[in-house]
Image (cartoon, rainbow, N blue to C red; front, side):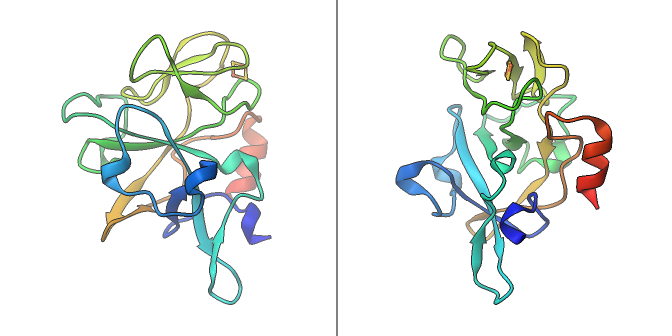
Length: 168
Ligand code: FES
């Protein structure tokens, strides 16, 4: 069903936090602290539908001062090299990754302390995760953050064949 589909091109990013769930994320709300978002598409009647039927769809958004986001981040998939989106699902065992309270602008998984650097393509900088978090291409449409393309790599804590199957 559509609420379980992964983020698709054209989806709007809306807040996933309880107090703001469903409200479109704006640029002004972003910064070096993690903002969690869901992709919102449309149902069969064309009404807005948050794709939260699959917990693996939760996304992590950050905004860093210009010049801080660097390779191997795909800059074309960011907004102005300042705003970047990733899967928030740890590639180790699928927990939702949060901020690293000891290191501003880094991420740390609450389950087994996997660490990622969102300024460098969410590469693994500590702990057991086997792969970086997948980057999701985004763009600005009016004041909305919109999904520009499918994940650039496998966003799931699953093997490659499962990822290939989901891409279709
Ligand atoms: Fe994230 Fe294990 S699930 S480090």
